[in-house]
Amino acid sequence: MAKPCSPFLAARPDNKIPVAVNFWRAFNGKLDKRVKLIFRNPKTRKTAEVVIKPIPQSEENRLLLEEWIASRRQAVKAKSADQIAYIYLRAMGFGDLTRFLLELERDAVPRKALILDLRFNNGGNVHDRVLEALMKPVYAKWRKRGLGETFQSTFGFADKPVVVITNEFTLSDGEMTTNGFKALRRGPVVGNTTYGWLIFTTSVGLLNGGSFRLPYWGCYTLDGRDLETLGGVVPDVKVVNDLGHAVRGEDPQLDRAVAEALKLIEK
Image (cartoon, rainbow, N blue to C red; front, side, top):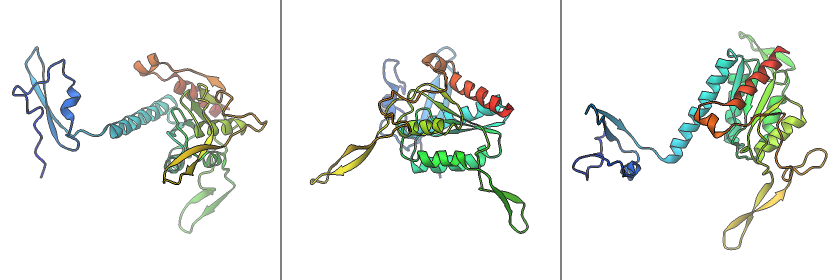
């Protein structure tokens, strides 16, 4: 049986929120409770009711991110006639790696190219696994009795074009991945120069049970340059998104990545 709706601003007899009042205050203490909202058109006097359940800001941010990812995926699908897969890596943890590998096999293997989006990536430590997956070749086929042939390795991807997108908020292990992608000459990097924040730290324990993190090892290019002091990894094709693009719902970096991937497909 459905739970009863909590009264919305029951303390106010007129059940209205004045314009000068921050309406978000009305949701305090109402997480996971059903709330009825009444909207009134001041001109027509018509009203509309809707029942909602407030959620924490962290959950809202997660849903907004998933909505953003889905919109990028749909845009790539439309602009490439479904020839190019789109995968977003928000961070470089093991959960992110698992999602990346699943999407690589599900979405990218059946298509002709991949756009790997590392924008706003806040790091972790799985860069080697990501790059390894993008470099895996297909070297044989096998067939189980009664079933069709499958490739070995299962999702070899070395022969398909990949384009990486970065921006000024790609940092830490996101930068390590971008640098490795360029060093391996796996494909072009499109977007803006990365943040320039790449050094690995480790935890040091204290006698009182506390701890602090200490810079422990650095990351360097093959010719010995410290990636922490280089000022970020520079893309091959520089495209800068600004606030105006976001307001208008535009994404020039994604558009250019699609164009670069289509060129590679043609070759």
